[in-house]
Each structure stands twice: as C-alpha cells, then as structure tokens.
Amino acid sequence: MKIPDYFISCDWGTSNFRLRLVETETLNVLVEHKTDQGVKVIYQKFLQQNEIDQTQFFKNYLESQINNLDEHHKAGLVIAAGMASSNIGMQNLPYGQIPFNTQGDGLLWQVISFKENLDILLISGVKTETGMMRGEEIQAFGLAKYLESYQSGILILPGTHSKHINYKKGEFSTLKSFMTGEVFELLSCTSILSNSVEKCHWINKRHEAFKQGLEIGFRGELSSNIFSIRAKHILNDANKKDNYYLLSGMLIGDELSYLKGTEQTIFLAATEPFYSMYKLALETILNDTQVICFGDKVLEKALLMGQKKIIQIHAK
Image (cartoon, helix red, strand yellow):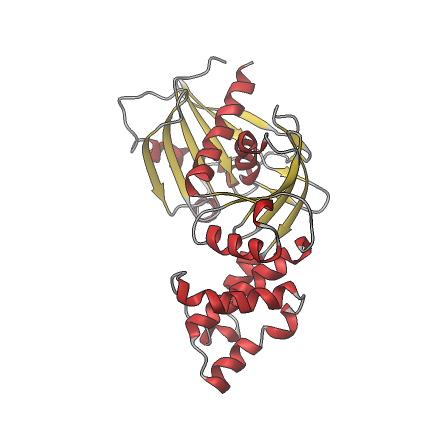
C-alpha cells in the first residue's frame, strides 16, 4: 500500500465521534468534525431497523460525516481507532495482545473496503488476562516517541476507565484498569450522594477539598468515608461544590495509592481538568522529578502519531 498524502483520522468512542483530515507528513489537521453520535448511539439505531447489516450501517454514517470534510484534499485512507472495532461497532475484531511494542508487534488491524479510492484501516484494541482497552493503545503507541529517552516507567491515561500501562525500552506491558471516572459519575449523579454534590469548574478555591479527599484515598479509607460526604452536607451544611472535589479526590487517591513509595518514573498524559488533578495527586506522593507530564496538545497529537505509524507499518 502506498502511504497517502492525507488520511482521515476517525476517533469513534462510546459516546462521541470525531473525524480529522490530516496531512500525513506533518500531521497538520486541516479540518475537524465532531458529533455526539458515538458507537453506542449508532448501534442502538442499527438495532431499530432490519434492512442493513451492522457493518454497512456504520459505513453509511461514516460516509455521511466524511462529506463534511474539505473536498480540496482527497484522503486515501480512513484510519479508525476506538470502539469502532468492538462488537457494538462497525466490525468486531479480536483484541491484540499485551505486550506490544514500538514496531507494532502485538497490535492488530484490518483493511475494510469502503468506497472507490478510499479504504478503512480498522484498528483493534489490546488485552491481557484481566483487562482490555480500545483506543488508548494507539495513544500509547504515539506517546512512545516522548518516552524513549527514559528506560522505564508507568504511563497513566486518566478517563472514564483510567489505564496504567508499564513501559520499558520501547515495549508496553501489563495493564491496570481503574473505573475511577465511571464510579465518580455513578456516585455523583445517581447515588444518594447526588444531592450533596454540585458540579463546578476546577479552580484554586476547590483544591483544599480535593486534597482532603486525596489523603483519604491514599490511606485506603475510601469505602468507609464515602457516606461522610452526605453527612457533611446534611449535618454541617458543607459546600456542595467542595463535596464534588472531595469525592473526586477520594477516588483518584484510591486509584493512585499503590504508587506511594515507588521509585519508578510516572508518565501522565491527560486533558484538563484531569491533567491538573492527577498532576497534583501524583506530586503529593512522589518526587517532582519522578512525574513527567504531557498535556492536551501532546495527547491530541499522540493519537495521530500512533495512527500514522500504523499506516507506515501496514505499507511495508
């Protein structure tokens, strides 16, 4: 396969859909298009009809959205990462296997015929015996360029299901998955605590409550203290916005508690506000020199870098 001058990056998650028209050599994004039509939504729409098979149904939506991109640059390939390769996505692919390395060993992908002069390169996720991920492995694959000057460490990718991936000399091995984001969503939105917290922006005024939560999580006392958030609100009229970050701190502290005392380098790659929250948490229990942080721009570029590397490997 010839490496195209342009490619369409498709990031199709559970809840959101994003296309970017990308110049392959420079990774400059020429056009970006987003919708809230994640895999879960499209799959539900597919189930409501019986005329078109699942793969074609997803292809039809993809084609309709590609029409929103710049027609002046003809991309030669759509490269899709995330939940598009799941059983509720365009086509279910088997997981690749951890460990995987910077040469692409361990990763799996498949070319799917799409339309004239435009194929889809569908990338699968990776798994261990106890965990799996779809999408984050391509971010890690792209981030490898930034990690290569370090011998080893743990890459942390916060999110709905936070991923902690061990890195050593160009290879990613062992995966820990934490449901931190999803548990926070359940507790803050649907549990009895929902009336005792109030969502608000991450500002200096909330840092103290967050730090209090961190300390509880770091001590391994999450379960015995969650209900105290409601008690603080009912009995002491505690500020609901402070409670929101107190709960967040408890959960993030619990997630990171196993890192206390580690001598390993920790790589954090995240968007705001997770970047600032996890950075503060990590620097509370580790030396500043141990924590290497990559923010929004690097993480955004990492997915494109990972996709480009897959294109290059596939073209060989």
